[in-house]
Length: 147
Image (cartoon, rainbow, N blue to C red; front, side, top):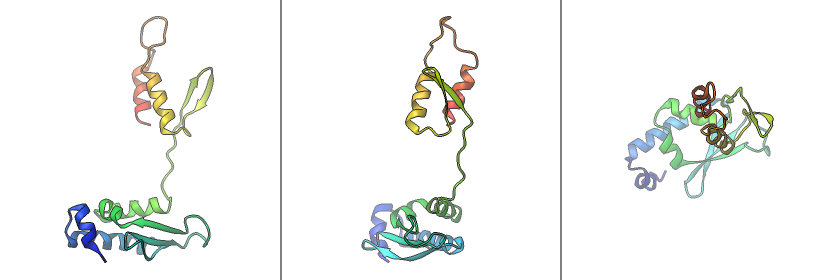
C-alpha cells in the first residue's frame, strides 16, 4: 500500500500507519458482517461490504477514507467505535425534555443542533417581570448545556 502518501499528511512513520491499518483490519474481521473488498481512488479509500445488508440497499457498500482510519484508529477500542459508526450501530441519544416556546410545548429529543442552540440562547435571557432569575434557572442551563 502507498503509506508514503499518508506519512506526509499525518507525521507518522510507516510502521505506525501499518499498525493502525492492521488494527482496523482486525476490527473489521472480528465484526462478523463487514469485509474489506478492496481499495478505490488510487488507494485513498477502503471499500467495505456490509453483509448484514442486501446488495443494492444503501450502506451495503461503504467507502472509508484511509487517512481518516489512520487519524482516528489509535488502538483497538477506537477501531471498534469506528466500526459501530460504519454500521450505524450506536446507542441512540434520548433526551427526555419538553419546552414551551411561543405558546406551545415541544419535545426536545428530536431537535437538531441549531434548535438546541436557540434554546440555549433563550435560556440566558431574563424575561420575568420581577427582575429576578427564574426558579431553577441554574439547573435549567446545566441541562441545556449537557445536550
